[in-house]
Image (tube, rainbow, N blue to C red; front, side):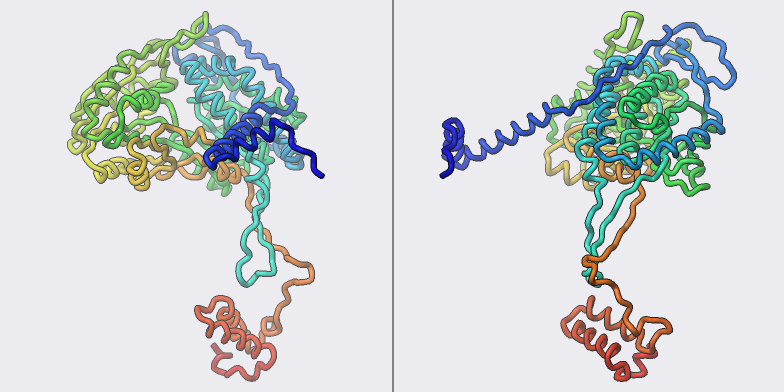
Length: 600
């Protein structure tokens, strides 16, 4: 006889089952408790100590041949110099990476997971240092760095550890009608050595993003960083070296290099796959170089994402999200919002409130000798950006737009800033030719555009060469209805940029925003060679070539194939029965097939 349940278990059981509603609450509570336990449980992972010490910024030093200078974009201060990789050096690195990849490809998913866990723990333990280095090298605030550099990196590593293996396990597929006696599946195998050319806007995450997917899928990878974020790459490369060492992985499995266009071209020619994140212009150059060796490429290029407020949207609930969407990291985000389409009924309210936020924002140098300065928005990273953005503002005003807030930039001794700016376009129909409506800004500009109805909105959203991300706010059904017609690789409904934080989803766009995906199942599988496999379901049931199809072909070869077509794919029972009869005739009594059918 079974032992009675403890009294406390019986009490919970009786309470849970007293009514259906209570039962549902109990089940939900148990599920939440199980999820909490999963979040709290962690396997044993060693800590990694990484030095982030560097010389204090100072006056410009004389460069040695082959060195590239590094400057703080918020002050213009010289940070140091980094050696530019030669073509011969890149080729040698690829060869070392190939040797490392052969070892790594033989590892289990458990071994690869442990490496990612070590990286994740290291990132979390050194988050403050990572953010300070990023702020110094790219001009963003440490808060923006915490969001864009650390938080999304940790989520990506977490997703890969939790779901990456299931994405790369062989997947069963239907063998179809004729091959009912077979088993079909898809396998994903490492490509070999991957290459990545990444931009300057998030120097840490842009390295870790391709690295984490590459090593989990069994590849080696060489990452070329931007010439405008070289200084930080020394520290981030050192972090990865320490993590590889702690995991017992080959030291040449992951390599971070610096260089110019020649360096990138050499890397593209020698790897098995290339990922490029950057401008559309340079993306075309990478694609052209890759075409010479038929190297597959993934291109994540420019964007000019729409941010839409449909009628009925509560402006107070959205305006703060809009401010971060347009001005976060000084607007230097791949999926940052640039075109803010606001329904006519909300245009005045939204414009007034977003301009009020702009007037309260504090802009300046993100870091000084004492540490974080507490500003809301930092500097522009690329030289000449303030002047370029100013020309876009001036052109917009010349085409009938008005400046609601900001609108001015400064460039002093290499330190570049542009004010959080609001450009108002109340009559887009009279603004034909305005560059601001079609050119990527990549700066702290929010362009507010009035629309009257859904048709006008959809036409204006899609009348753009870019199609990367999008955000739409409003009643759920209205958002879904409009969202179906927006040309974009990603859509966040009543939110902003959530598609990228959800790392199970693919990242990528269309049109001039590029093609191919990284992140998610699609991105992880893209790091692999896809192999189709068909094998026998039973060893005693193998394909036997029928006599009519053996060489030299019988005169009933065609009728035999015709019989197969009718039997397996005939549209009626009569056709299928006729197919069986034809097959039997061809094998058993071929002389019964008419000469006309034999000659067909």
